[in-house]
Length: 73
Image (cartoon, rainbow, N blue to C red; front, side):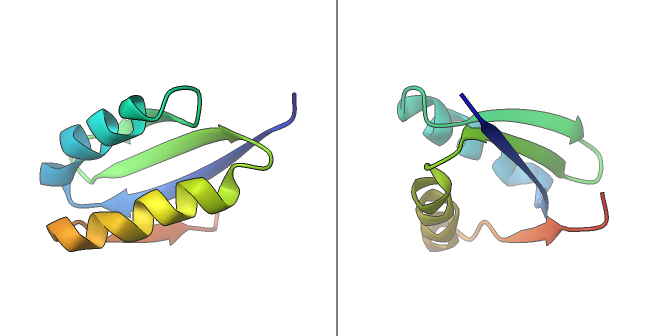
């Protein structure tokens, strides 16, 4: 299985909630907190699930959680 990884900066306060939401979607994505102080996280997901993950991230905006993708990795 091919996996994809994306890194984001997000508000620290939203990390726990985002992790819980991702875990509720079984086998869709894993969240790793790279730096809890700055809010840098990494999302690992199977190829083909990019739209699902993008939809979850977009939906987090309803709860005031914003993401900024880190592209210079």
